[in-house]
Image 1 (tube, rainbow, N blue to C red):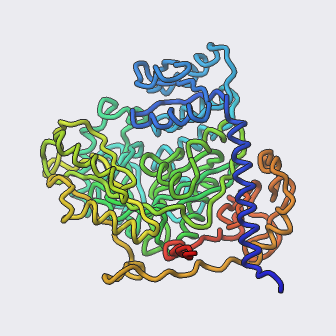
Image 2 (image 1 turned 45 degrees about the vertical axis):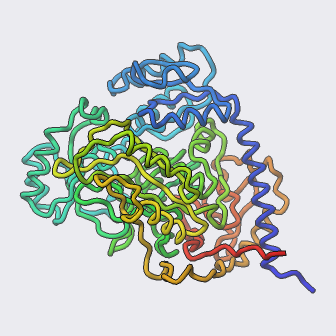
Image 3 (image 1 turned 180 degrees about the vertical axis):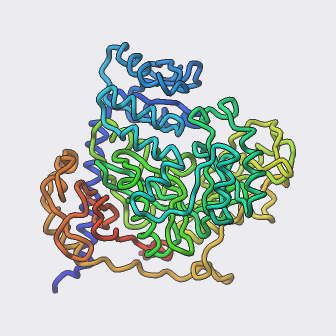
Length: 558
């Protein structure tokens, strides 16, 4: 009796996954011992990146402002005034060359220094994104202008440098609108405004605060953008790029943000959006990063909304997502963005394997202040004691007690987050409610944790969990692709993928998701599930598994 195609495909899928893991081990071996220039250490919460470099056997040369916390933990430190945008690149290149040691790559994980990183990489002759593309991503106005020029969906927007510009913007941009600094980060200074009077008031209030002393990110400028408000579900789409093509993507659902200041409240990974929306979001993120912005290498963190008029970009960040998201992706998909960026900047082709189903599911809620109070050591200890709970994946507190918490009416602030895990997204959400909900007694009264909610069709009935459902069937074209094209690929072909060779992994062409021969770009991830695709010439949508409704089958008892 002939073996069923599904079983053959499963075996081939496992074989390909094993081969890809082996190739990843080879990449790690190639990465070990490399010396990488990191431009900008950021705040001390970024120490995890430097710790990961040590684990991978990487030596670090740090370019940063004098007095940075990270100077004692790196091999070499080059103090440079990174806020002097006219001379910083020249000084940084000169300082690194003066060390008279070989350097293998240049990267950054700090938003402030993304353009400087591009200049330093170019000055040292290393792989990286262009300065122009990084400035396009760094400026929210430049991103909008580039998207409009590329013919991509763009809300109405207007640059504001003065009160006179504000009057022009009020006349041209339909309300409601969002006012925000074009060089801001983490929703800093962003505000939803419903009419001209609110826009003027917000502009005057926020403009009075912006300075380099307030945040060094404003060394790039203190201009504003007024843009049409986007409704709908907010998501983060995190991408990895090699030679201008997307080789990995992950979608994180962000629940309703706290308006009008747009603070994050809660997140889910993996996404629970329908497949059609997932495909549209990833396609737009890909086209925006590669076609409009011009990014080619490394990571991109793209904030988006799926609106009543389809997918829209909120902003593009040419870097790895901040915490907790890059750690979430590593836990849920087994893909380490820090490691991949290190490899990429050293010229090692990246093509991580994305499993068909998530390794676990995560639901997290941010600790936001709702009133002024004192965050005490007792409050800190009670929250951190939750780490012993098996339902809890992480408790992260970003302030040291005792700490005076700012709340209404002065504004809200984020103190940290709590994340719970589960074998399904439903169980992760349930665990988060049990640990942080109003009846848990675990959250201080002056803090709030937004409870993650699921669409009605994904919620569990009160009398128990939903019944397991079978995963979507795979297409025969995938089996043909693996059997005919990848069956004999040597492992070294995956390591030595030549960038720029059309439609190939080495010399092997893939079969498209509709069974038609042809490639979806120059360099493709060897991923049997079709999660990687080429761009800007995206010919077919990526196949996306609707894993939000999938329940793993329990093993049979022997």
